[in-house]
Image (cartoon, rainbow over all chains, first blue to last red; front, side, top):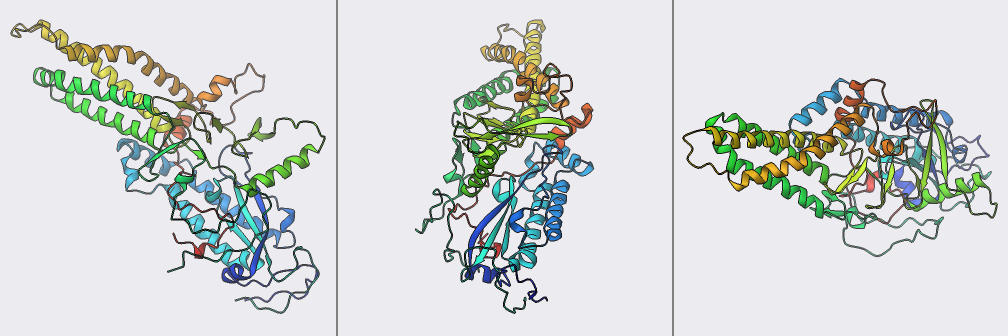
Length: 169
Length: 332
């Protein structure tokens, strides 16, 4: 449980506490797109560079942790090793019919990722008026982060109004 | 259960393309609104190219040749030689059919087109990079470094994205496909990241099947002529037809298998090989940044690597809504 910091008078943090409130009282202000990092080839990896639009919204370390964890998940899904060879050979021998009843490792990891993103949204991003879209919804090209504004407040995201004393859930 | 209908969140649309869609449309799946030139069957489970005529020809040739083999040659060979022959033939035939259908019916790795927000964001970035000079802007490319090799990413004007490395736009299907190999009319689909291994297994097993049928039909014909108690010496027309089909197809299919074996062992796509992307003729330091260095790893990676699921998510419910709804409220 944490209370919204009163000392950060320069940032206008909408007093969202959870996704429910985000839905009811927010309006979409902007979207930030985290692009793919292809420096290691075609494996799925996102850039960890902190976008400037999020500077007033979330701490750099939290953001980088999220992206790094996602990158690790994708690396796990695309890892070529003993288990993937076994899966591949078994699939080949059964003329790939085995995929009708078995879930591939990639799909299993994608489910874990979806859960992780939902958890991150609930715990970290929604209270800050942000929302992460699962990259699979965008063809694994970008991580889309939506920035919400409180409907009642002014349209600009940088303001000096102090945050009213609010406690998180 | 969570409600399916939710109140509209008001949004300041950044592009004129984003129109809030208020009317309650009947539940539609994403494949019904697919922007590319693909055909869908079985409620989005099957995805093929627009022109499927040649695919039916492939199917016809395989079924007829195998049908002739099993009808005219197998009874004789099973009796005179061994019943294992039709069993092996049958297994090969089923494997060929399975891999063919899998290649033709699966999503080759189509990249979904950019949402209007994404496209607008990219355009803004490009404008900032180019500056407003008033001249016609140069073709949009981005240079990146992959494992020490410079690779140019091109901007796709149709899909409004920077194509990932190894992706290419198929003009027949009007889609960008990941790890695009080629568009194969014989299977009626593009061959890309998600179905390359099925395609390779198909042509490999078809090579074996063609050689198998060819060899055993010739054996049958020769045996008939030699066995003295066989009164009739004329060979059934079916055998001759099977031999003819096999003879003409074996060269191209075996050749193709050999070519793709080479591509797999060097981790290249047909597209890259044709363009000579990694050829040393382009530059002294030009090398393939995706190759793992040895043939075995390259083969294993191509054939036994992880199989990513379809990114077009064809069977999901279609929505015009581009604002992410918190996951809790979406009916799965």
